[in-house]
Image (cartoon, rainbow, N blue to C red; front, side, top):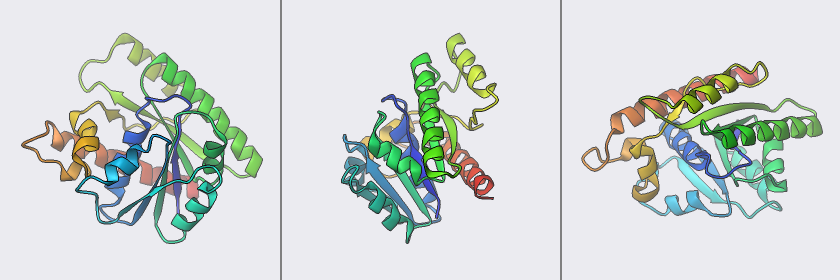
Length: 223
């Protein structure tokens, strides 16, 4: 069963939103366990709200001493296991990465996020060497502008996408009110009230394309 970890050494990269959107989308068709390993517990707080997809279970991690057992238990019965890690390099993050089939590194099109993404990718490589198996990783650009991007954003995107050794998802997770509202309304984008939240249809399309690309990437890395 594939394990997907969301990691970035810098907080505020859109990591938790990326994990939640993917988990809810995958849970439309399969059982998913989402492990909340962020000390702030944003996913756990979301799970207390109404609308959580029936096939999505949330586990609040007990920390670095229990994360390996939590991943193993989840992977024993769920087709997909997602781990939302804290926004800093840590032993817990390293443990989770070592058990992952894929590490997604969310990053905004900003210099600090890009630098942190590179540091995280280097950590994935070190963990891969430690466990003596390939751990695949890809950058997911988050909170991107749906209209006109700034010159800086375009430059950073080109730099990341043009780097020969860095995989960047073609799909970007755009900055949308629908994604931000999940943490106050509960549920996934498909459960949002179109009368209360703007751009739900575009958010649903964005989430679907994102999930589809991740599934395709998982098939590639597992073969």
